[in-house]
Amino acid sequence: MSQSLKMKSSDFDVTTLSSHMGAEICGVDMSRPLDAITIDAIYQTWLSHNVILFRNQKLFDRDLVRFSRYFGELDLGPTMAWQPEEGQEHPEIYVISNVMKDGNAIGFLGDTEVDWHTDLCHSDLPPKATTLYAVEIPTDGSGDTGYMNMYGVLEALPQAIRKAINGRELKHEDAHTLQGELRHGVSEEKLRSLEEAPGPVHPMVRTHPETGRKALYIGRQYNGDHRAAYIIGMPRDESDALLDEIWTIIRYEKCTWYHKWQVGDFLMWDNRCVMHRRGSFSSKMRRIMHRTQIRDASLT
Ligand SMILES: [Fe+2]
Image 1 (cartoon, rainbow, N blue to C red):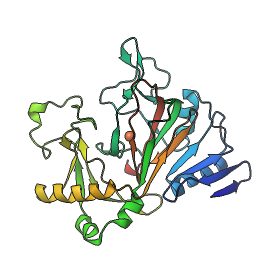
Image 2: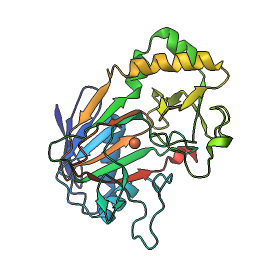
Image 3: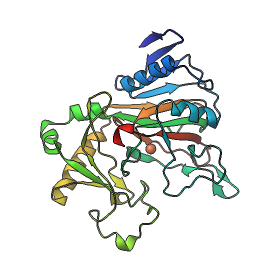
Image 4: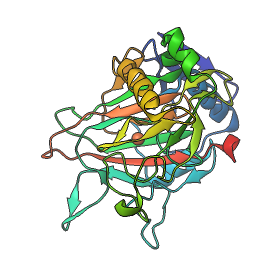
């Protein structure tokens, strides 16, 4: 399904990528500064389609930072094991890669599968958007990124579950990474239970501050072997059972779209209504992605 957006000073084509979400924008060169009308049209397309894709881009980090800044202030990347190098020109760029250089990884997340999650749900101010730019991808085409429309997941939940989560909040554990490693400043001895773990509380059903639509906001199921969240004010066994029931439904992947990467692809997704995951790929393959994250001004 394709449509053209014609504007006063620029135009681009929008092609819908799936029935659940995703739109490809053609006719925009992200390496050049964009005018306000084009920027607004891109933003509106993003809000409508939740994930936008630009292909065949040739971007330096400065281009990626400039484009991302059109839509809000940028945060530095997740800091669990990473600090920007001193003197780094663009500390907003967070490298996701399995590539080793002089015995050290140049980025994060390696080559393993990364389970369904919402970025930084374990922080007080999760970013509204995450962007990824493909610098180098596995030559066998593996390492897809999956996206899930959480408006759709909420609408499809059985009534009994919707009733049970109505008005409920989740405490998200901030002690472990998605892979189960302890974050900086947390010791295992002090971490006797999920209830005692540091972490923020977010509503299970979020009203998107810009679209006004409601979406399920459930974060992560596990961080390694550790449960990642519990429902505030509910006995733990009931909370665990209800969350597992919801995660079973999520894993049917009814509202899902997978993106197969090409070098030069740029994706930007809305963390307020989309979860994502990554498929594993061979450790013999190189994958280098440059990432930014855009602050959610509605939370500050
Ligand atoms: Fe992520």
